Image 1 (cartoon, rainbow, N blue to C red):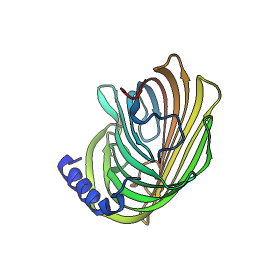
Image 2 (image 1 turned 90 degrees about the vertical axis):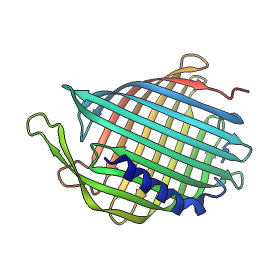
Image 3 (image 1 turned 120 degrees about the horizontal axis):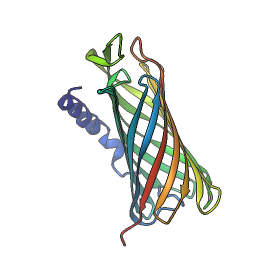
Image 4 (image 1 turned 180 degrees about the vertical axis):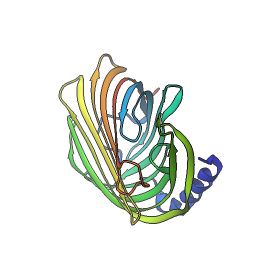
Length: 265
């Protein structure tokens, strides 16, 4: 991938969606403190799909809550090597800001970027905005849905693989860059079974004329202490129209150690 070209595309995309994102958009009644907080996690990954590998992954979630505003930055990296050859490499970034309109209704704005060397796309970047509704919002159960519209830029690429090892030997960009309007939907679910165990599920889809992308992240977290937890996760990524020769669906199973850092105040 050409990093400079991708960066220019992303900056352009941010400019085009900037008008939608003025006034970032819900400080939910979830268990986030006012101010900064977050969690980082890392662990072993077993990935099966376009790439079969044993690898390592790392995730970082940062939150900033100010009264009715909540901002969430998610960073996600996956890297693996097999027989001395890179067999998995994916980098994701998503920024979503919510604003609480009523007790149940919130507005949101989001920017996302993905660089997956084995998906058949050089990159996928998007900006979106819309409305959400909290179907359930208690201390033990949170269930929110959201829907909106946005703008996406993506570029497909053709992967040349070694017929024996399956390693990618060459990456050929498939012009032109595709830019389009998309419809986006999302689900954010959390249920706490007890003081130490909870299940979380996040679903995001973006649908345009050239491709529909879907990602679902399911995890079970068990607290070992105030700051340390174990998390078992299962992630699905699906593209309806990948380049020829590539699978539509990738799945990733993880077992991570999670470290939570509360508001320094």
